[in-house]
Image (cartoon, rainbow, N blue to C red; front, top):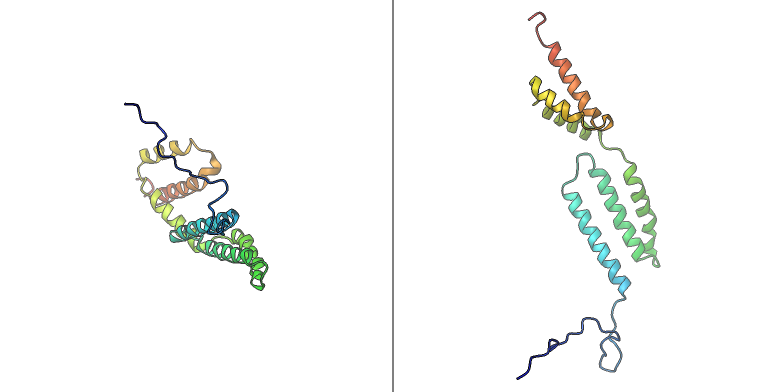
Length: 165
């Protein structure tokens, strides 16, 4: 009685020469580069779809423009030898111009109004002091908008009080 060898069933994961077809030549396969490019295109499309499902307010126009640019650029690269490859240039122009479009003022207004409503919940003096102590831990360039809203709310609260009461 002897011990079984550890390597009883060997499996070859990568063949160096490839499997031979019926006549001794390897079967035709797509080049690795093409497979890699297709995989990156699929991943990019999935990320774009997930990104468009829940866009930030005001960024929908920019994202749609970037998605159109990415699609036109991908088609132009794939068909660069055909007449369809002409769509490469507009695709690149869309990709370049997408970050240059400013966010819509309506979206900025709604976002700011929502922030003001959330900050209005800090109505007592102790809550405001706690919030300002938290804001003091961050640089002014980061918290300037919050501090401005809090200052306007404090001024409005002091103006609405009855003088001498």
